[in-house]
Amino acid sequence: MVFAIDLAKKASLLNEVPIGCVIVNKEKEIISYAHNMTIQMKDPSAHAELLAIKLACKKLNVLKLIDCELYTTLEPCEMCQYLIIQTGIKKVYFGAYSDSIMKNKLKIKNNFLKRNEYYGGINEKECSDLIKKFFSDLRS
Amino acid sequence: MVFAIDLAKKASLLNEVPIGCVIVNKEKEIISYAHNMTIQMKDPSAHAELLAIKLACKKLNVLKLIDCELYTTLEPCEMCQYLIIQTGIKKVYFGAYSDSIMKNKLKIKNNFLKRNEYYGGINEKECSDLIKKFFSDLRS
Image (cartoon, rainbow over all chains, first blue to last red; front, side):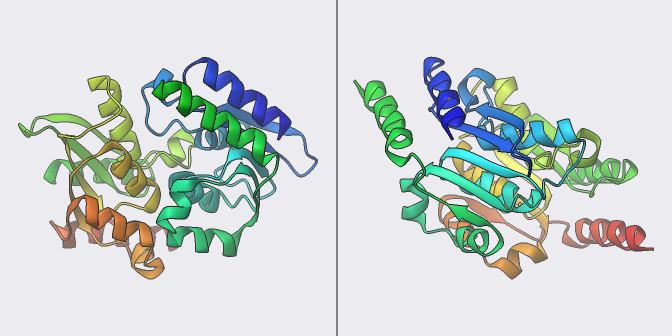
C-alpha cells in the first residue's frame, strides 16, 4: 500500500486524481502497478486499477489473475470492480472509502463482496487526505 | 446498427465474442467504432464499447461525449455502462439483451436508465443469433 500511495502522489504531480494501484502475485512479488492517467492519456477508462490489471494480463499473457492480489488507494469504482470480478482477483485491499460508491450503493458491490475478499481502510487517512487535498487545490 | 453487426461478424472471424460498437455525433457522423478484442489484445477490458469510447475521446480530444450516441450489438456490461455514464453519452441503442445483466439485476442499470436514453432490441435476433452461434461453435 505504501508503494500504491507513492504512485498516487506521482499522479497528483501530473494533475491526475491521486490514485495508485499495485498488483502482486501469491508470493507477494509485484506484477504491475499504475496510477490514474485519464487526463494524460485522454482516456476516461485510464483508472489506476484498470491500467494495472491490463499490464498484469499483458505481462503474464493471461486474461485471468486468479492468484493475484490488488492494492489500491481508493475503493474501486464500478468499472474497475467489474474487471476485478472478471479477472478473478480474489483479494482486494483499498485505502480510502469512495463516497460516490457509498452514495450509489450499487448492487455490483454486493456481487463483488460475495466473490472477493475485500479489505478497506488500509492507510485510510493518508489515502483519503491525498484525494481531499487534490480536489481542494483544484477548487481554489 | 448494421455497421455494428458487420463489426461483430469481423470479431467472430478472429474468435472474439461477436460484439460490435459504433459511436456517432449528433449529425449521425461516425466518430469511432470497434469490436471485441479481448483475446487478440490479451486485455480483459477490450470490449467493443470501451474501445470505441476510448477512440472517440482520443479523436475528439475530450473526456466527455455529451453529444454522441452509441450503437452496440449487445446490452453493455457494467464496466461499459459505467464508462457510458462517466462520458455522458445520452443515447444508447443496443441489439441483444444480455442474460448476465438481467440475472444480476445490477443497480448500476437503474442509474444508467435514469441518466441515459436506452433503447434495446434493435435488430435483436441477428445480434443475438451471432452470439448464440459463437458460443455453440465454441462448445462443439
